[in-house]
Amino acid sequence: MDLGLRGRKAIITGATRGIGRRIADLLASEGCDIAFCARKAEQVAETARDMERHRVQIHGSVVHVRDAEAYKAWLEGAAETLGGCDIFIPNVSAGGGMEGEKSWYRNFEIDLMGTVRGCEALMPALEESDGGAIVFISTTAAVETFLAPMAYNAIKAALITYAKQLSQTTFRNNVRVNTVSPGPIYFEGGSWEQIRADNERLYNSTVAQQPSGRMGTPEEVARCVAFLASPAASWVNGVNLIVDGGFTKRVQF
Image (cartoon, rainbow, N blue to C red; front, side, top):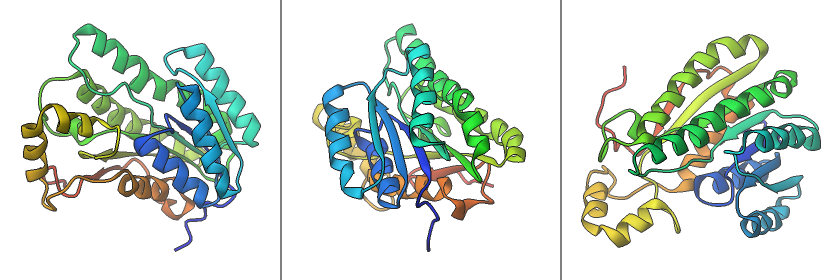
């Protein structure tokens, strides 16, 4: 199936590693022009060089989404550089952590406000597209209790609600909003690799809860994001797609 992504313009935050990197790479391989950001200059440069093989426009920048003014300026500049914006994927996250209020402020500013500010800054460009698409990245830890009370889990849950409500107001202007919520995903340098090294019992217990007996991969998440972002999903709006191999045990009606 042709997803219809060739020639589309995508802006992605946090795209130098893990799920974000796989999303950017897959969209570029499908013919999308890409603007992405991350915090580390060396990783941004390496990612941009590697993605040039797809022979599309690739623009990488060093941006900290917690710096609201710099972030909004980058988003607007990225859309101008690409010649528009058809797809926005706010992927960057502060991750988990239990450091009291520090964790709450960090996840609020990066996960939640990074998404809100991005949507507000790019909405004019997305509305000019012939089919704009926004895909949030949440987590199954937002839809079930998981490990312990954490800011990450609660803030990601807020994103699901925001996405659903936003989707009801933007589709009249031809902009769809959906969410992808991955379960435990293993990749080199990721949180589950660290957990495996620090707490093998927890890691093995989590794997044992997987019907497949393994964790997911970033590529498996990226494929779902690419579909929702594409014109092929033109009638999918306001959905929270669980991508977890059956890890969550709730029944979705």
